[in-house]
Length: 116
Image 1: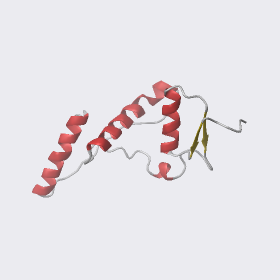
Image 2: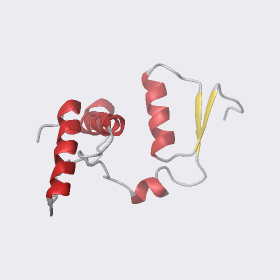
Image 3: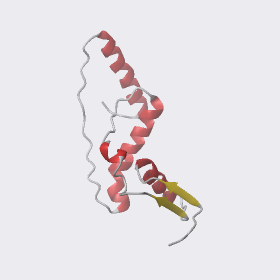
Image 4: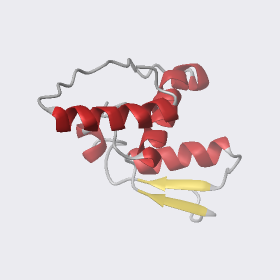
């Protein structure tokens, strides 16, 4: 085992593993990921699948859109079965204020490219 690396990532949750994946995708090869336990077994495991399409922040919506797009292609890209399947959700507007909020969310979703 090497005792040094150009880039060292501490933590094998979604952020560490995602960073490693994208660095490798960009051609970085001298990268080391250090994890005290099993990959993605901490907080990441508890939040698996939390990729809602309707979020109230444009930048966060773009991140979610990119993530969902990546998860849909991941098996093809890596040859590893990932078990990804997208599903929808149902939200109810109980009053006019909720309805206005949903219209706002729909505007963000439309801008990001979600089809509703």
